[in-house]
Length: 60
Ligand SMILES: [Zn+2]
Ligand SMILES: [Zn+2]
Image (cartoon, rainbow, N blue to C red):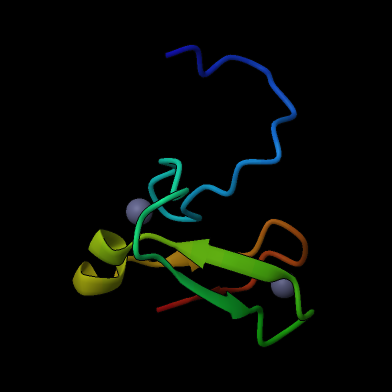
């Protein structure tokens, strides 16, 4: 419900930001810095761009 400043440990989709807990999401390492990135199946299907929160790398 509340999406205001929180430091939850829930994983969220890097592209659309929804919580992916319990969903069939993809998880992979940033090719640049190795940060773990999560992306929901929907964004994966649509090939949405993602941006690494650490190094700013963007990719499909
Ligand atoms: Zn998504
Ligand atoms: Zn990165």
